[in-house]
Amino acid sequence: METVILAVVIAVVVLGALGGLIVGSRRKKSLPPPPPAAPDITAPPAEPHVGDEAETPRDEPRRTIEEVDLPGGSAPVAVEEPPAVEELPVPEIEVPEPTAGRLVRLRARLSRSQNALGKGLLTLLSREHLDEETWEEVEDTLLTADVGVQPTQELVERLRERVKVLGTRTPAELRGLLREELLTLVGTDFDRTVKTEPEDRKPGIVMVVGVNGTGKTTTTGKLARVLVADGRTVVLGAADTFRAAAADQLQTWGERVGAYTVRGPEAGDPASVAFDAVKEGKEMGVDVVLIDTAGRLHTKTGLMDELGKVKRVVEKHAPLDEVLLVLDATTGQNGLVQARVFAEVVDITGIVLTKLDGTAKGGIVVAVQRELGVPVKLVGLGEGADDLAPFEPEAFVDALIGE
Image 1: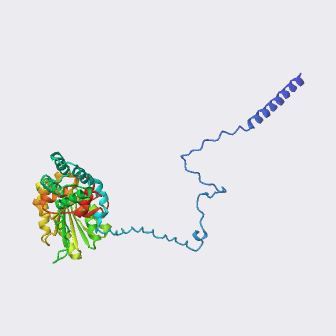
Image 2 (image 1 turned 135 degrees about the horizontal axis):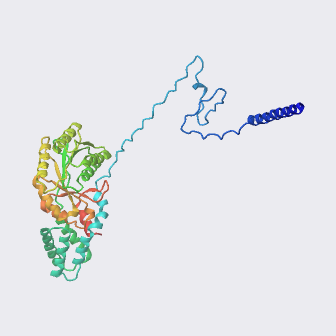
Image 3 (image 1 turned 45 degrees about the vertical axis):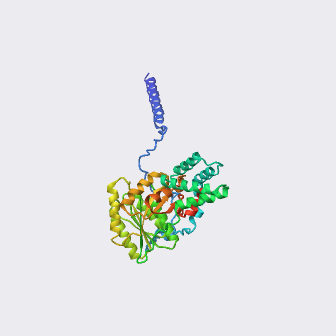
């Protein structure tokens, strides 16, 4: 009996030992590795550990041996070259085309705008019977072209007498007759020279006046080109201090032909700028000083008084040789009102008619001369730099009546 119990105990011990071995082996079995954690993109890159291989970034430029610090020596200092200074281009001085015959070269442009007047008159005068109705049409044609009432009546009277004496009228005879009478009306006895060379001193002084919008500053710049083309040296006075762009505009015109521009502070005293311009012109020994004044409405009394002040201040140096009034030919009879008021403030000595190529009312040449008793000296026939021409009566009348 005892033997049986001992055998059972041994069997239990043996089974327990075997169970412990199995459980132990199960506990020692390795668990699967955890999934890798997502990289933290906000964290700084980990420092390399000892033995880790460091890679040279491929986009990093490789250093030459001269740039590497060697033991006991100093690396050469790289010397940077100074940046290249960009040279501003020097404005090229232009050579304006000569003024002699300039109106003849521009005659085709003048003919396109003025031809209607001459053709209309020739057509009427070519009628077989010139009755009262026809002569009234001749008058209307002249008045529409802004010739003016008094000059129109004079021209019609002379034409009626000469046609009656002439009797039969061939086209060539009519053209010659009309040419002679129009030349008489425009006037061939005026001195149309722009006075810039006084005999007793230098420089000649020219003041340019006019209302806003007539192209006064542009005309002053173009007149500088006319004078340079005739071999004269010029100083420009930018006395239009009320319009911010006027001085810049005038200076640009001057630089193109090598003329020096005197200017003052914006909204400064125009008379002071004009005075300084003449002073500079004297010191530099130039031939002509051109003074561009501020455009002003002829109805503004205060502004017109200031124009008189500019004239008086300039004449402390020397008398003015020319006072040119710039008129827009497209304004027609309104230009005569402006001319009358300016003539009362400053002594106008000559007229510049701009935009004559843009109107069919070329009769304003006759009307303004009759109104002021002073000649048209220059005419503008386009926007080009050399489209300002000395007025030549013969070329003008030829443009009126065509070929």
